[in-house]
Length: 358
Ligand code: KG4
Ligand code: ZN
Image 1 (cartoon, rainbow, N blue to C red):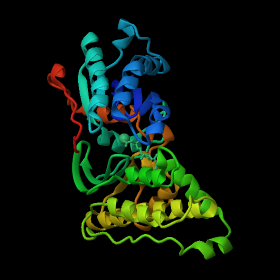
Image 2: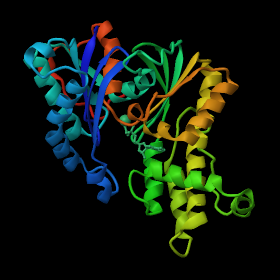
Image 3: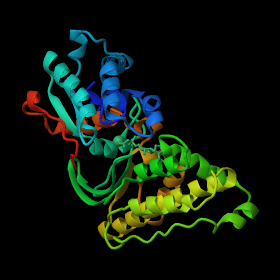
Image 4: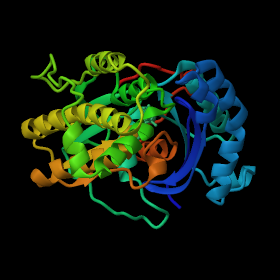
Protein backbone atom coordinates (compact mmCIF):
# COMPACT_ATOMS: atom_id res chain seq x y z
CA UNK A 1 0.00 0.00 0.00
CA UNK A 2 1.26 3.46 -0.90
CA UNK A 3 1.29 6.56 1.23
CA UNK A 4 -0.03 4.91 4.38
CA UNK A 5 -0.78 7.49 7.06
CA UNK A 6 -1.76 7.17 10.71
CA UNK A 7 -3.68 10.29 11.75
CA UNK A 8 -4.89 11.57 15.12
CA UNK A 9 -7.58 14.15 15.97
CA UNK A 10 -8.28 15.32 19.53
CA UNK A 11 -9.50 18.82 18.68
CA UNK A 12 -12.73 18.72 20.69
CA UNK A 13 -14.72 15.93 22.32
CA UNK A 14 -13.88 12.90 20.16
CA UNK A 15 -10.65 10.95 20.51
CA UNK A 16 -9.97 9.59 17.04
CA UNK A 17 -7.25 7.75 15.11
CA UNK A 18 -7.32 6.46 11.55
CA UNK A 19 -5.20 4.72 8.95
CA UNK A 20 -5.69 5.81 5.33
CA UNK A 21 -3.92 5.40 2.02
CA UNK A 22 -4.72 8.44 -0.07
CA UNK A 23 -8.52 8.74 0.01
CA UNK A 24 -9.04 5.11 1.05
CA UNK A 25 -10.02 4.65 4.70
CA UNK A 26 -8.72 1.44 6.31
CA UNK A 27 -9.80 2.32 9.84
CA UNK A 28 -11.46 5.26 11.54
CA UNK A 29 -11.80 4.75 15.31
CA UNK A 30 -13.80 7.40 17.16
CA UNK A 31 -14.25 7.43 20.91
CA UNK A 32 -17.02 9.93 21.69
CA UNK A 33 -17.16 11.85 24.97
CA UNK A 34 -20.80 12.92 24.63
CA UNK A 35 -21.81 11.01 27.78
CA UNK A 36 -19.16 12.93 29.80
CA UNK A 37 -20.15 16.41 28.60
CA UNK A 38 -23.92 15.92 28.37
CA UNK A 39 -24.66 17.07 31.89
CA UNK A 40 -22.80 20.37 31.30
CA UNK A 41 -24.76 21.12 28.11
CA UNK A 42 -21.48 21.60 26.22
CA UNK A 43 -17.83 20.55 26.15
CA UNK A 44 -15.99 20.88 29.50
CA UNK A 45 -12.34 21.36 28.39
CA UNK A 46 -10.54 19.88 31.42
CA UNK A 47 -12.65 16.73 31.26
CA UNK A 48 -12.09 16.51 27.50
CA UNK A 49 -8.32 16.62 28.02
CA UNK A 50 -8.42 13.90 30.66
CA UNK A 51 -10.64 11.63 28.54
CA UNK A 52 -8.30 12.10 25.52
CA UNK A 53 -5.30 11.17 27.69
CA UNK A 54 -7.06 8.08 29.01
CA UNK A 55 -8.21 6.89 25.59
CA UNK A 56 -5.55 7.90 23.08
CA UNK A 57 -3.34 4.80 23.36
CA UNK A 58 -6.25 2.42 23.00
CA UNK A 59 -7.74 4.36 20.07
CA UNK A 60 -4.39 4.42 18.18
CA UNK A 61 -3.84 0.72 18.81
CA UNK A 62 -7.36 -0.11 17.65
CA UNK A 63 -6.95 1.99 14.47
CA UNK A 64 -3.73 0.12 13.62
CA UNK A 65 -5.29 -3.24 14.39
CA UNK A 66 -8.40 -2.62 12.27
CA UNK A 67 -6.10 -1.62 9.41
CA UNK A 68 -4.29 -4.94 10.03
CA UNK A 69 -1.09 -3.27 11.20
CA UNK A 70 0.44 -4.75 14.35
CA UNK A 71 1.83 -2.24 16.86
CA UNK A 72 5.30 -3.76 16.57
CA UNK A 73 8.33 -1.90 15.32
CA UNK A 74 8.54 -3.82 12.06
CA UNK A 75 4.91 -3.46 11.22
CA UNK A 76 4.81 0.24 11.96
CA UNK A 77 7.56 0.72 9.40
CA UNK A 78 4.82 0.15 6.78
CA UNK A 79 3.54 3.62 7.60
CA UNK A 80 4.78 6.56 5.53
CA UNK A 81 3.85 9.38 7.93
CA UNK A 82 2.06 10.38 11.11
CA UNK A 83 -0.51 13.20 10.82
CA UNK A 84 -2.18 15.26 13.51
CA UNK A 85 -4.68 18.10 13.90
CA UNK A 86 -2.89 21.17 15.32
CA UNK A 87 -5.88 23.58 15.24
CA UNK A 88 -8.46 25.01 15.36
CA UNK A 89 -9.90 23.48 18.51
CA UNK A 90 -9.63 23.38 22.28
CA UNK A 91 -6.02 24.10 23.26
CA UNK A 92 -5.69 21.51 26.01
CA UNK A 93 -7.46 18.88 23.92
CA UNK A 94 -5.32 19.47 20.80
CA UNK A 95 -2.21 19.14 22.97
CA UNK A 96 -2.93 15.46 23.75
CA UNK A 97 -3.04 14.40 20.08
CA UNK A 98 0.00 16.47 19.17
CA UNK A 99 2.06 14.93 21.98
CA UNK A 100 1.12 11.39 20.91
CA UNK A 101 1.83 12.12 17.22
CA UNK A 102 5.25 13.58 18.05
CA UNK A 103 6.08 10.52 20.15
CA UNK A 104 5.06 8.08 17.38
CA UNK A 105 6.92 10.04 14.69
CA UNK A 106 10.07 10.08 16.82
CA UNK A 107 10.01 6.44 17.91
CA UNK A 108 9.38 5.15 14.39
CA UNK A 109 11.41 7.81 12.53
CA UNK A 110 8.44 8.90 10.44
CA UNK A 111 7.74 12.37 9.02
CA UNK A 112 5.08 14.39 10.84
CA UNK A 113 2.28 16.20 8.97
CA UNK A 114 0.28 18.98 10.66
CA UNK A 115 -3.32 19.37 9.46
CA UNK A 116 -5.91 22.11 9.94
CA UNK A 117 -9.11 20.55 11.34
CA UNK A 118 -11.29 22.50 8.86
CA UNK A 119 -9.15 21.30 5.97
CA UNK A 120 -9.97 17.83 7.32
CA UNK A 121 -13.73 18.53 7.17
CA UNK A 122 -13.26 19.74 3.61
CA UNK A 123 -11.37 16.57 2.58
CA UNK A 124 -13.89 14.33 4.38
CA UNK A 125 -16.03 14.74 1.24
CA UNK A 126 -13.42 12.80 -0.76
CA UNK A 127 -13.34 9.77 1.57
CA UNK A 128 -13.51 6.29 0.05
CA UNK A 129 -13.87 2.75 1.34
CA UNK A 130 -11.00 0.22 1.19
CA UNK A 131 -11.82 -0.53 -2.44
CA UNK A 132 -11.54 3.08 -3.52
CA UNK A 133 -15.27 3.83 -3.80
CA UNK A 134 -16.90 6.22 -4.45
CA UNK A 135 -14.37 7.42 -7.02
CA UNK A 136 -15.62 10.94 -7.62
CA UNK A 137 -13.41 13.36 -9.54
CA UNK A 138 -12.89 16.76 -7.99
CA UNK A 139 -12.96 19.65 -10.47
CA UNK A 140 -11.52 23.06 -9.48
CA UNK A 141 -12.39 25.63 -8.42
CA UNK A 142 -14.49 23.95 -5.75
CA UNK A 143 -16.78 25.86 -3.41
CA UNK A 144 -16.72 24.42 0.12
CA UNK A 145 -19.43 24.96 2.71
CA UNK A 146 -18.12 23.94 6.14
CA UNK A 147 -20.70 23.83 8.93
CA UNK A 148 -19.69 22.51 12.33
CA UNK A 149 -20.05 23.26 16.03
CA UNK A 150 -17.24 25.82 15.95
CA UNK A 151 -17.23 27.05 12.34
CA UNK A 152 -19.49 28.19 9.52
CA UNK A 153 -17.44 29.03 6.45
CA UNK A 154 -17.54 29.35 2.69
CA UNK A 155 -14.16 28.58 1.14
CA UNK A 156 -13.01 28.66 -2.45
CA UNK A 157 -10.59 25.83 -3.14
CA UNK A 158 -8.51 26.68 -6.20
CA UNK A 159 -6.41 23.52 -6.01
CA UNK A 160 -5.26 21.03 -3.37
CA UNK A 161 -3.98 23.09 -0.44
CA UNK A 162 -5.01 26.44 -1.97
CA UNK A 163 -7.85 28.11 -0.12
CA UNK A 164 -9.56 31.49 -0.07
CA UNK A 165 -12.00 32.05 2.78
CA UNK A 166 -14.97 33.87 1.20
CA UNK A 167 -17.10 34.22 4.30
CA UNK A 168 -17.38 33.06 7.90
CA UNK A 169 -19.62 33.54 10.86
CA UNK A 170 -19.41 36.93 12.52
CA UNK A 171 -20.47 35.47 15.89
CA UNK A 172 -21.80 31.97 16.69
CA UNK A 173 -21.39 28.95 14.44
CA UNK A 174 -24.46 27.23 12.96
CA UNK A 175 -23.94 24.02 15.01
CA UNK A 176 -23.40 26.09 18.15
CA UNK A 177 -26.69 27.93 17.45
CA UNK A 178 -28.57 24.62 17.04
CA UNK A 179 -27.01 23.40 20.31
CA UNK A 180 -28.10 26.62 22.06
CA UNK A 181 -31.64 26.41 20.66
CA UNK A 182 -31.88 22.85 22.01
CA UNK A 183 -30.61 24.08 25.38
CA UNK A 184 -33.27 26.84 25.42
CA UNK A 185 -35.90 24.16 24.77
CA UNK A 186 -34.27 22.02 27.51
CA UNK A 187 -33.64 19.17 25.09
CA UNK A 188 -30.08 18.04 25.83
CA UNK A 189 -26.69 17.97 24.06
CA UNK A 190 -25.62 17.92 21.26
CA UNK A 191 -28.68 19.77 20.04
CA UNK A 192 -28.33 19.44 16.24
CA UNK A 193 -29.55 15.84 15.96
CA UNK A 194 -32.37 16.42 18.51
CA UNK A 195 -33.61 19.50 16.65
CA UNK A 196 -33.41 17.50 13.40
CA UNK A 197 -35.58 14.71 14.81
CA UNK A 198 -38.22 17.13 16.12
CA UNK A 199 -38.31 19.05 12.83
CA UNK A 200 -38.73 15.73 10.99
CA UNK A 201 -41.66 14.89 13.28
CA UNK A 202 -43.23 18.24 12.49
CA UNK A 203 -42.79 17.74 8.74
CA UNK A 204 -44.63 14.40 9.00
CA UNK A 205 -47.76 15.95 10.57
CA UNK A 206 -50.90 16.17 8.41
CA UNK A 207 -51.17 19.42 6.45
CA UNK A 208 -54.43 20.26 8.26
CA UNK A 209 -52.57 20.46 11.59
CA UNK A 210 -49.56 22.20 10.05
CA UNK A 211 -51.79 24.76 8.32
CA UNK A 212 -53.26 25.84 11.67
CA UNK A 213 -49.83 26.27 13.26
CA UNK A 214 -47.63 27.54 10.44
CA UNK A 215 -47.61 31.22 11.37
CA UNK A 216 -47.64 30.74 15.15
CA UNK A 217 -43.92 31.31 15.69
CA UNK A 218 -41.88 33.54 13.43
CA UNK A 219 -38.22 34.52 13.33
CA UNK A 220 -36.94 37.53 11.44
CA UNK A 221 -34.45 36.30 8.84
CA UNK A 222 -33.08 39.68 7.83
CA UNK A 223 -29.31 39.78 8.24
CA UNK A 224 -27.43 43.01 8.83
CA UNK A 225 -24.62 41.72 6.62
CA UNK A 226 -26.90 40.79 3.74
CA UNK A 227 -24.53 41.86 0.98
CA UNK A 228 -21.48 39.78 1.89
CA UNK A 229 -20.83 36.06 2.27
CA UNK A 230 -20.59 36.06 6.06
CA UNK A 231 -23.03 34.38 8.42
CA UNK A 232 -24.51 35.48 11.73
CA UNK A 233 -26.38 33.44 14.32
CA UNK A 234 -26.40 35.48 17.53
CA UNK A 235 -29.45 37.55 16.49
CA UNK A 236 -31.40 34.42 15.67
CA UNK A 237 -30.52 32.90 19.03
CA UNK A 238 -31.65 36.03 20.93
CA UNK A 239 -34.93 36.18 18.97
CA UNK A 240 -35.51 32.51 19.76
CA UNK A 241 -34.86 33.09 23.44
CA UNK A 242 -37.41 35.97 23.55
CA UNK A 243 -39.91 33.91 21.58
CA UNK A 244 -39.74 31.02 24.03
CA UNK A 245 -39.69 33.28 27.10
CA UNK A 246 -43.08 34.64 26.05
CA UNK A 247 -44.55 31.16 26.30
CA UNK A 248 -46.22 30.51 29.65
CA UNK A 249 -45.31 26.89 30.31
CA UNK A 250 -42.86 24.29 29.14
CA UNK A 251 -43.66 23.52 25.51
CA UNK A 252 -44.23 19.98 24.28
CA UNK A 253 -45.90 18.04 21.46
CA UNK A 254 -46.69 19.89 18.23
CA UNK A 255 -45.52 23.23 19.62
CA UNK A 256 -42.10 21.85 20.55
CA UNK A 257 -41.70 20.22 17.13
CA UNK A 258 -42.81 23.44 15.43
CA UNK A 259 -40.35 25.58 17.40
CA UNK A 260 -37.48 23.21 16.53
CA UNK A 261 -38.53 23.27 12.89
CA UNK A 262 -38.79 27.08 12.77
CA UNK A 263 -35.32 27.47 14.26
CA UNK A 264 -33.77 24.85 11.99
CA UNK A 265 -35.32 26.42 8.87
CA UNK A 266 -34.01 29.84 9.89
CA UNK A 267 -30.53 28.46 10.61
CA UNK A 268 -30.34 26.71 7.23
CA UNK A 269 -31.91 29.53 5.22
CA UNK A 270 -28.78 31.68 5.48
CA UNK A 271 -26.53 28.73 4.61
CA UNK A 272 -28.46 28.23 1.37
CA UNK A 273 -28.77 31.94 0.60
CA UNK A 274 -25.04 32.67 1.02
CA UNK A 275 -23.93 29.47 -0.76
CA UNK A 276 -26.21 30.39 -3.66
CA UNK A 277 -24.68 33.85 -3.79
CA UNK A 278 -21.13 32.42 -3.74
CA UNK A 279 -22.01 30.06 -6.63
CA UNK A 280 -23.30 33.03 -8.62
CA UNK A 281 -20.13 35.07 -8.02
CA UNK A 282 -17.40 32.40 -8.24
CA UNK A 283 -18.95 29.88 -10.70
CA UNK A 284 -17.34 26.81 -9.09
CA UNK A 285 -17.17 23.41 -10.79
CA UNK A 286 -17.87 21.36 -7.64
CA UNK A 287 -19.67 21.98 -4.35
CA UNK A 288 -18.13 20.31 -1.27
CA UNK A 289 -20.12 20.24 2.00
CA UNK A 290 -18.51 19.11 5.27
CA UNK A 291 -18.77 19.41 9.07
CA UNK A 292 -21.02 17.92 11.75
CA UNK A 293 -24.17 19.87 10.77
CA UNK A 294 -23.92 18.40 7.25
CA UNK A 295 -25.15 15.13 8.84
CA UNK A 296 -28.60 16.78 8.76
CA UNK A 297 -30.79 15.15 6.08
CA UNK A 298 -32.97 18.21 5.54
CA UNK A 299 -29.91 20.41 5.02
CA UNK A 300 -28.52 17.88 2.55
CA UNK A 301 -31.78 17.97 0.59
CA UNK A 302 -31.73 21.77 0.47
CA UNK A 303 -28.10 21.74 -0.72
CA UNK A 304 -28.81 19.01 -3.29
CA UNK A 305 -31.62 21.12 -4.73
CA UNK A 306 -29.34 24.16 -4.90
CA UNK A 307 -26.60 22.16 -6.65
CA UNK A 308 -29.11 20.70 -9.11
CA UNK A 309 -30.45 24.14 -9.97
CA UNK A 310 -26.89 25.23 -10.76
CA UNK A 311 -25.88 21.99 -12.59
CA UNK A 312 -23.15 21.48 -9.98
CA UNK A 313 -21.79 18.13 -8.75
CA UNK A 314 -22.14 18.07 -4.96
CA UNK A 315 -20.02 15.95 -2.58
CA UNK A 316 -20.96 15.10 1.02
CA UNK A 317 -18.89 12.91 3.37
CA UNK A 318 -19.84 9.39 2.19
CA UNK A 319 -20.80 8.15 5.67
CA UNK A 320 -21.73 9.39 9.15
CA UNK A 321 -18.33 8.63 10.72
CA UNK A 322 -16.66 10.95 8.20
CA UNK A 323 -19.19 13.74 8.89
CA UNK A 324 -18.73 14.56 12.57
CA UNK A 325 -15.22 14.83 14.05
CA UNK A 326 -12.91 11.99 13.01
CA UNK A 327 -9.26 11.31 12.17
CA UNK A 328 -9.84 9.76 8.71
CA UNK A 329 -10.52 13.21 7.28
CA UNK A 330 -7.19 14.35 8.77
CA UNK A 331 -5.39 11.38 7.17
CA UNK A 332 -7.00 12.11 3.77
CA UNK A 333 -5.96 15.78 3.91
CA UNK A 334 -2.49 14.67 5.03
CA UNK A 335 -2.26 12.33 2.01
CA UNK A 336 -2.21 15.35 -0.32
CA UNK A 337 0.39 17.04 1.89
CA UNK A 338 2.51 13.90 1.76
CA UNK A 339 2.46 14.07 -2.04
CA UNK A 340 3.67 17.68 -1.80
CA UNK A 341 6.18 16.69 0.92
CA UNK A 342 4.70 19.24 3.31
CA UNK A 343 6.22 17.89 6.52
CA UNK A 344 6.71 19.64 9.86
CA UNK A 345 10.33 20.81 9.67
CA UNK A 346 11.03 20.57 13.35
CA UNK A 347 8.53 18.12 14.91
CA UNK A 348 9.66 18.92 18.48
CA UNK A 349 8.45 22.50 18.06
CA UNK A 350 5.00 21.73 16.60
CA UNK A 351 2.51 23.54 18.80
CA UNK A 352 -1.28 23.75 18.97
CA UNK A 353 -2.95 26.75 17.26
CA UNK A 354 -6.46 26.94 18.77
CA UNK A 355 -7.60 29.73 16.43
CA UNK A 356 -5.94 28.46 13.28
CA UNK A 357 -7.67 29.57 10.07
CA UNK A 358 -7.53 28.13 6.56
O1 KG4 B 1 -17.88 18.82 13.10
P1 KG4 B 1 -18.37 18.54 14.46
O2 KG4 B 1 -18.54 17.09 14.86
O3 KG4 B 1 -17.46 19.18 15.55
C1 KG4 B 1 -16.84 20.44 15.38
O4 KG4 B 1 -15.78 20.50 14.73
O5 KG4 B 1 -17.46 21.40 15.87
O6 KG4 B 1 -19.76 19.31 14.62
C2 KG4 B 1 -20.52 19.24 15.79
C3 KG4 B 1 -21.82 20.01 15.56
C4 KG4 B 1 -22.67 20.14 16.83
O7 KG4 B 1 -23.07 21.48 16.96
C5 KG4 B 1 -23.87 19.25 16.55
O8 KG4 B 1 -25.05 19.68 17.17
C6 KG4 B 1 -23.96 19.33 15.03
O9 KG4 B 1 -22.63 19.33 14.59
N1 KG4 B 1 -24.67 18.18 14.44
C7 KG4 B 1 -25.84 18.30 13.76
C8 KG4 B 1 -26.21 16.99 13.40
N2 KG4 B 1 -25.26 16.12 13.88
C9 KG4 B 1 -24.33 16.87 14.51
N3 KG4 B 1 -26.56 19.38 13.43
C10 KG4 B 1 -27.69 19.18 12.75
N4 KG4 B 1 -28.15 17.96 12.38
C11 KG4 B 1 -27.45 16.84 12.69
N5 KG4 B 1 -27.88 15.64 12.34
ZN1 ZN C 1 -15.06 19.41 13.46
